[in-house]
Length: 264
Ligand SMILES: O=C1O[C@H](COP(=O)(O)O)[C@@H](O)[C@H](O)[C@H]1O
Image (spheres, rainbow, N blue to C red):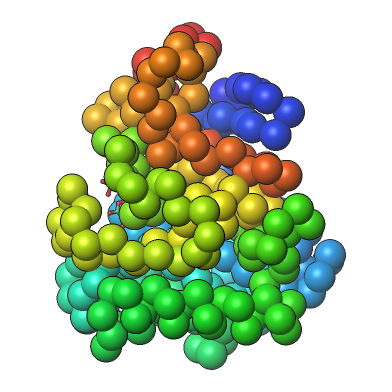
């Protein structure tokens, strides 16, 4: 069954699915389409991924037809955020993606830019920003036309039940960071406390952002991120994702969409 599609603004679309299998297929179709556009435009596809259940929702990419039809040699993988733990730790976003997705795809190993797990949070954030800066210089990662920020071809985010995305948590000073591309926090309200994250200006400079939320537990966060709100209402990180030039597409299941006033 085709998803119900709501067009909220010219650059924002919400796709609501009856079941997770349908959502996964639609997500894989959308990623393949964006990948083809990017490769046609500038020869590569630079993607930042997140942790959480979005990784299992991306699983169709490792199945037919996508595994054969996608040009994996042009993919460059980054992380929107990482927890400060060893790469083989159960909380590592790298481990989650490696075990459940990347190990099943023919991505060139040297195109996988994971965050250094042998450094402090501060050092790892600054090293990751340096790595991205080098890749912007060589145009593996594009640069924004309106700021000096990197312009990832796609950033994939999952919304937490509290409205956080990447490691940008509600009411946290990290939301104010305007200068760094990558920063760190030491006190995340969700464990583990130490994390490294792309900042809001970088996420909002992407050519495309996909936000995923599934399950009734996320319905309130989704409502507060998408519905018309009183400007006095506290601003949720998920609502602060508004690409300046790029496109934003939400992938929801009916449970996560259930509190949206526009959804019938
Ligand atoms: O901690 C994280 O959480 C989000 C997803 O939130 P969840 O509570 O639904 O698991 C994830 O996307 C992010 O990358 C991560 O570090």
